[in-house]
Length: 89
Image (tube, rainbow, N blue to C red; front, side, top):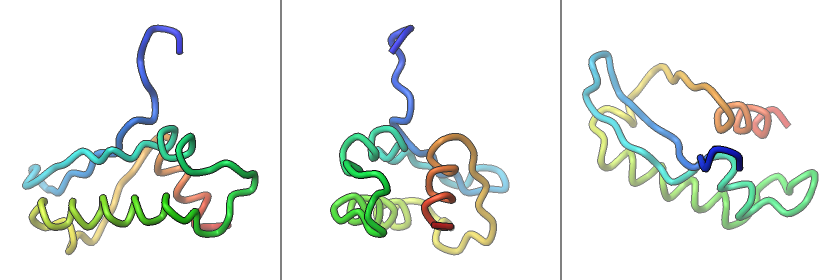
């Protein structure tokens, strides 16, 4: 990639209103796509990819106070757009 940066490498989770907790998951849309999605369209559940996302989120819930009880989620960029598209079929 031009400029030497890496896009789509992580997903950040923050609990507010004044950050009470935060974590970074090794789950960016590019990283997960390159690792697990080899067909277009992908299967409804992408096997190991689904397991990895679930495992990472469970760790985040255990390590970030208030995350599991959050009532509102705000997201932007590629990962959230990809997850929303996947969820909506």
